[in-house]
Length: 332
Image (cartoon, rainbow, N blue to C red; front, top):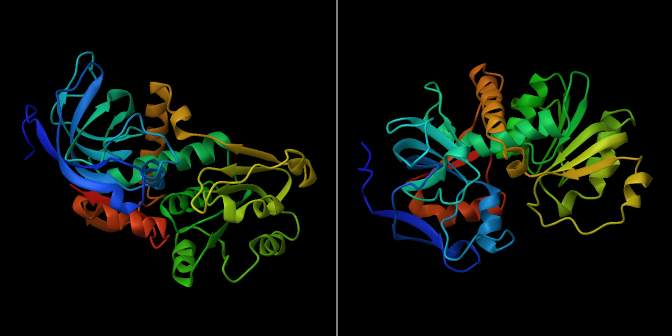
């Protein structure tokens, strides 16, 4: 059972000042009734994402300090605010792109909440929405992958990477992935990669050219950042797309735009999931496509690690050290 909607004190994780994992403090906080357009959710599971690290260390700026991190969760609606007609207490839901998930309960704008299909459990729901919607906009909206395309996916054994590889393979692409260990390489191969490159042992740009007989890829999906740029551009065919969506190794340094011409008149873009979800109809359409591809079995969501919310600092340490594969969920 979940607490009554009138409860005013919950356990949560807060950041009072930016820093390392030790900046995450587990404490009691007050929570009020949902305001207009808000839903109060009793969290059954919370997703762990690299964006949480960016907010914790100050690379991304929260609205104010202190704040409750977390951008993804799943649970049961306990109350709704004025003008909320799509949800009612007792509904199973998942939500994305709103700070405050690292808590027993969260107040969430209904705009970012979707009904969780009965076939998807709470842990899977919490693990899949942010990463899955990221994969959706990368594969279907930023560069639309079609049969016959060759794609390169960095960090192919990561949370987003495993979804990207499965989905791209389902779409008919030839999938090349990079990983940092034999164990991660084996996992990537099991999840849709046709070829896997260990970037600790091989020059990934040279190996991509060998795999593609010198032609290069149609698109590179890069969540690594500094360590893989600009060599990712060398993996592209003329007019190919370099799509950046993260900076796990650090931010890409400023570069001369003429470099794109020199590398084969290629395109480069960095888009935010937040912008793709600006319209409610897109939230619904994108999540529906994600749920469909998961329900079909084409994409399986891998929850590899479950930790209590009290161990959130260790979860951040592992993620930041790139020791994780698949998804990690936190259990309030």
